[in-house]
Length: 534
Image 1 (tube, rainbow, N blue to C red):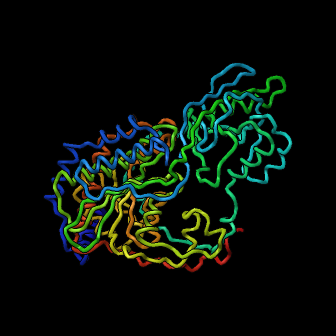
Image 2: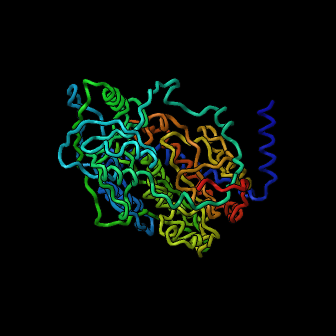
Image 3: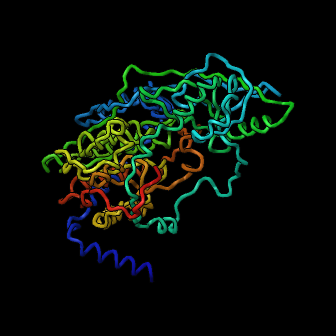
């Protein structure tokens, strides 16, 4: 009875809403379903990005190859205005080869990866390890004068963890229901103190140089032999000098335990050969259009980030989303659609280092924000200060971007969409999802989601949305890890996701009225009168 009442309520809401007068073109949906499920090329695209090109660190040779290949694919599909849109980023970085080996008290090869944007070792280096945990500049005094000629283990060893839940899972009805929560915002009084501090990684690098350390080693954040290699230092004014390596958690803990013994102090051999790529400090977003037939410059947009980390092939993060965006473009071109509004496809760069690519697009074409008026703060990367700067200053193209849809949570099927608190858009999405309920896409959640490329659209009042996806083993063992390869991508799920992405784009492009917008954000009133700690 409860389900029946909910269904009747939903129908009543849809019938009463004036913005839903236009019905979904179900004949068009049939065409999208046929093309996306029976003639899919999504896995061929995913395989090229992963098996053929591999990990796509921003501004690395692999990313340059991916930029060129995806742009050519869009051209071959027949899309218009295909271009590489530049923004300033910094140095590229890639791994040539590396190794780690314990030589005392016994010989043992260890699982290791260089940390991104740290330099090569001068050949094979050998040194005694010292466990010197450091997580803030306040820790440096304890180790001053003790690190010369040592390989420094900077993570605090923990006891490890054994999994108590299955790493692979799909969302249940209860999960989807519990996730439909309106996030009430809270606002601290503004503070710029934290923005002025150097990142700890830069401080630690300088300290290790002063102390004469040979290299530093950190422990992987996950057990099971998984490695990550994430790092910072890509800016031209932030170049690291001390080689850094990450060890598998089990190998790291073994070294730390041995370092506590009196008669078996471990010695480590490290070799890291990496390359920096400074020839072009611009990164590039790849953009392509299906031109609209009217609506005077209005467009809808789909995007996913093309870049990845280098520990593996960047499959579920985020060749999956990139392949879905490209497949949605292929589906719509294969059907010969002539949308009212232009449909734009974006493959972003620099997402892994702070969502740089989509922010650069917003800043250049949609809206910018006033400077803070402080030379030091205004010289920081755009993403560091963006949310602290008021007022928002819309550009001429602000009203043209009608909707943006993002995919960046692995290769799980789409189960719905986050309405980002937009109560006017929610019933529209419910109607658009209805043809795909039988494929598992049923949920419109009022929650806001973050940490990916729709967020800066939202901060300037553009309707930007992230789809809800089955997690599978994305967070458990794949996100940013050394096993993020093609093997863990789900073909049926990605085919379903591409169908829904194409359908949402066509619906948004052809609707009589654009998606309802939230009010243009203005500087919020603090809910907590005390500023964050300086």
